[in-house]
Image (cartoon, rainbow, N blue to C red):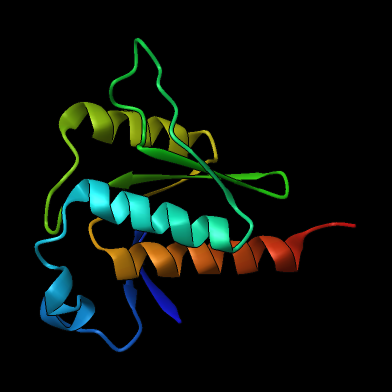
Length: 127
């Protein structure tokens, strides 16, 4: 189960320190590796994962996830990296318009977010 720290930040339940949240083997994982593996996981769940290239928007989140008419964005970073000011602005703008946007710095966190988002969509899908 996931515990929400604030909008867009989560930790696996029971974790109280950063060392408890992340498998030590994943600490040196590159952003592109986290992103690739997270997208592979999403695809295994039937979620469409797309990378949008917007010519005038270098601050757009790394990946757009699409599932049953719902959208989620994830900006991937290496462990403990932060979004730059322009990325923070874009994430804030998307959230202010009702979109789900997360910043993930490890693979375990991204898998939890993807799985729980899918479960949420499945449980709230109107037939």
